[in-house]
Image (cartoon, rainbow, N blue to C red; front, side, top):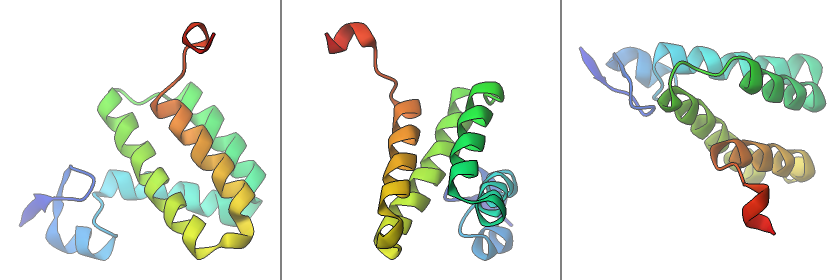
Amino acid sequence: MFQKARCGHLATKSYADAHGGLCRKCHANFAAVVELEKRYGEDALVDYWYSWILTNLPESKEEMTCFISHLVDFYQQKLVETPSKQKYIKKMLYMLQSVQEPSDAETLR
């Protein structure tokens, strides 16, 4: 039986329940980023994330928004769980939010 997953996509109920409410595609994207952080550290993750976003823009703005919102949720939770990494997590959240809502240099003047 299919249901709407937390990410807004359709997924089987059993899969969504077992993977934090995410569909297969969103879970795979999310899991890859988490694995990169575990293997190579925080700075590598920030570099990877930024280059991935710039070079592999999803087919639609919806996909990009979905992926970034999962990351924002994850890092906001990490901010509460891991205060010792506050500087890194805030840096990541700033970068994610700047992609979601890019600023225009002209409007800042």
